[in-house]
Length: 305
Length: 305
Image (cartoon, rainbow over all chains, first blue to last red):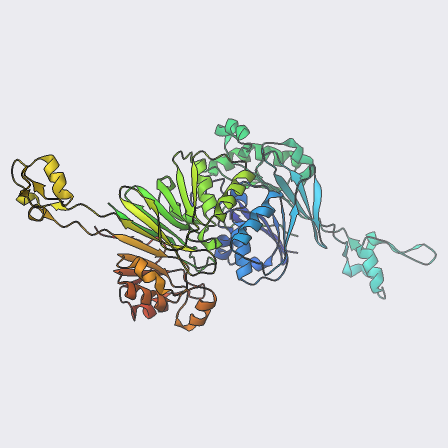
């Protein structure tokens, strides 16, 4: 499965320095998951030649406008493009009426089903599951109701070691081995031990998205070991006090969370407009967690299988 | 007075071909009037180095999203920029709750007064007046409630012909001449005839904005003689039937209205996404009204005094 993240927007509240507000697209084969949708997200999709029709799921972390003002425009365009397939939105509950009131004002009867799943829970909760992935949502400390998301591949099957496969093995026996089960004789003795004919499953990849949040060590167990962590980094060390007041984080705090959680890679975004060049944020983070990278619009982060 | 129009977006419903949905900025000295505000308008303002703080008045023609989805983002940014001065919005009434519900969701108490003037009238009506200009709003034939706008300079004073001005004339006598009044002796006889000492007032400039509309000859008397007319031109002659169904106009219809109304110059926009290059629309319009021009984003149309 392709497991790839595209950055559509990476600025904080006010669009500036040619940077758009927050939006990311997670591409999982043909199932696209849009994570936040700041103003102009649909224009960014068009700029990067991405078809909005492939988006099946939208996750909105919270209802500050820089994380969702682009959604109604995207939905309207999907309608004008005659979309027919269902779109499912996970978001704080007030968003549903915000969308509906605007559709009513334009007398738009959507050409496709819009499913709205309100997020109101505390704690870490699985909100989505299909054959390949699960999505968990967990609260962030941001003043208003706000969620982070963990998108994770389901456990995979063992890999058959074809060189060792005996002649005459049956298909259903191979499927058993793939599930990691030994194949038994009728008397219960082992015919083929899974460990002899298979390699361990490839690890399940995961992406953790920590949208706007104060420094919060409660995130650590939830995102532990993620292959890729996005953690907002609105400010540098010079503005640590301001980060607390505004319920945001510094780059160094993002790096501290990444280090404590033992993630493989950290990416930063949601830069304050005061940082025309966010390189100082990167440097401060790398002092704590070297595998840190900045996001720029159009960047793709691919998680290798 | 500077009387200048800046094009921020000129595409129809779906952003495409690097074109943004409809938004225009009318610059009248330091009073900026924003006319429609499609998604990304604030990003366009930033791109063209225009400070949103100068916008005092917003006119929203109708509540199809490509004409207003950018407004809540602009308002939010004005708030984050600590705007203090009042912003007045003229729009169909449903927009007020659309804005308020979004401000409530983010728990935003605006730092500046937001005045909302609902437009519900039929016929042509003056909706605004200050020392320099008037604004009229008039209904357009677009399926949902929709208005066009006429922004017009007030009648100006006569211009004093300084070379002819006699020695010893008093300030209050000059002011009388400027108003076009003769200055009289106490016995009622003429001391200075206005026609001898003044030149006629410069003509009052006007801009007519005909947002989304079907071909409608009722517009002609309202916009007669405008210096500049914007008239939507969603389609070319090849799509004349589609124009009727969708309550839009062809470029040739826009030109016909311009010709009948005797305007000085016509500009086109709101191009359908099917026209990557709108030059064919221009050609069709010029066959009827030669003084027709396309709009491109960033274009400025200055009305000379």
